[in-house]
Length: 422
Image 1 (cartoon, rainbow, N blue to C red):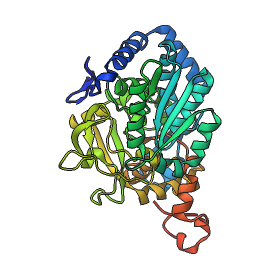
Image 2: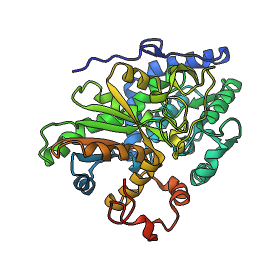
Image 3: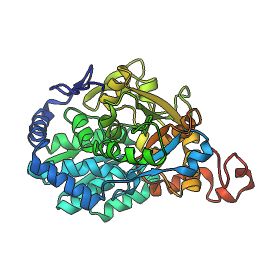
Image 4: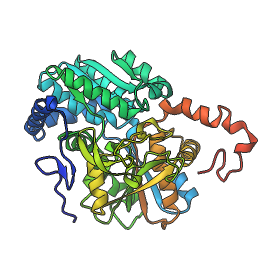
């Protein structure tokens, strides 16, 4: 099996990761590292964490065989890890519970967070309500408009939502403002970062809390594959969408030692990888420092962050978690792109074939699984991390597709019964 020990003591994944933060945050980060080191293997902490996942979140989330989709693709069997069935509707709650538990043990009564698609913000507001913590969520004003249902959910849960009007008014800018808040309130504030980015120990810590996804899959897949009389006990490929990359790292990390399982991250290709309107940091970016860590980022020749684009707010980010950059460099994971149009088609297709409304982020992973399945034999398998549900994206999809999309003759006959083709 593949030997893998990352990160090192300073938070480096090869040349990536580390901690590049202002001097004013040095004490806060040191305090956080020491607290996580104390509790990450503490039996009482872990017992509480897994109890919360079981009784509050509803874990383990099931693995579902998308049988009709698999038949229609005519190739590999496609399985979906149903993170969309978690309380709050996505994988984000896994990590938020762990960090909120740390915050309470560290005596931090005020929580701040950034959010793009709103799912991390909703998860943070949810756990703050449960634990009686003050909650402030920063969100780009563009994302506030396109994710209004989640904004209302956060407010219902008692959070203060702060729209950010600087820059591109999306996830990057929300994270910038959250960092500024943290600098100004380090004594009483805990910053819950929602992805596997940021200064050490965040990439490691978020990965560890999200690894429950892949750990469950390792236990669930042998029985699922035995039912299909597959020749292997684990999937031939594991696929997940990648923005910052927490859902992908959550399912990838436990599978890293399993060399026969391909790990495939799907970035937002937007209007095309060569269009300049995408969020594909690993495929079109270069090494640089962003939000406290060295990773692959989208930047110009002067090192300035370039504008990003994606149909999905959660993938609209100019960087990626440093561990993903390392996995790409060592060849253990591969990264591909799916366009807005392909993701939207996969969204409609999964709705109509399996009765599941996926998040637009997850739709990128579904779209690539549909492509890949056609190139594989029927006795092989693909496991897709369905990272969230698509309730939040209904408005975006309606605007892009037309609310009467399935009633228009022009949308019929595109290769899939009942709706658009992928």
